[in-house]
Length: 318
Image 1 (cartoon, rainbow, N blue to C red):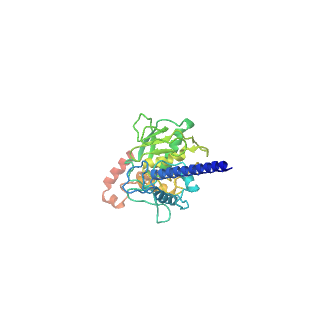
Image 2 (image 1 turned 90 degrees about the horizontal axis):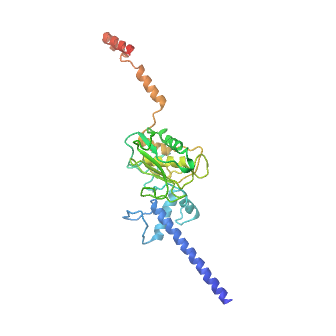
């Protein structure tokens, strides 16, 4: 009986130790995650590599509170279920800081100098050319159409336009699908986790994780259009937004058949590239120029009837 109890106690201690080890690993992973996305505040820290802190417990608590506050979670400072679920959600690889701050005015976001939601960089031109170097294996034949439509969300709401060209032609934006180590300093992590990444202007590189199950017009898998619109926002000069419904929010929200840019997304892109010029506005402008006559002022007619006749004659000939 004593041996049985002794063995049971040893087993119980081993189980408790394993739970403690697992908890430590989870905390360490959480701290690395929070550091990676900008929630860990450490003086004079420049590297985003593994952390080495004197008081990791306190740092984790403060970082979790910041993370929970930003993403509308209950502020506990502990690694609870809701926080773990958020951390495990698919998202963009770009850090959340600098990030958009809520505006003091109703609606939209406060635009700060040097950019938080709007970055310090933008394209110097408003007509951009893009090239699709390879298509997603799950969406062969549809990839380019989805990409074109994703660009349209931004061009419909701003003064910027896009044109697809052959990869061998001169282009501004390059779109590629790749897995794991795919040619830059930011390797993908396999299915789930990081879905894609893009570089701010005027770099032009936009990469999607080929290990993801990208889909089109379905709630299954990862909707390529949703991810593409977000990454194109980065490529145009937008950072992350903390607004829950914003396209530029860092977390993937799934397929939505009524998907559209949020008010803050629109305000941000227009602050960089202006408002779109509608076709009817262009037509009105041309019509106004066509109907405009140099002799519209009657006083000028009286003043020099010969010149007026000459101009009128010239216009009739034209």
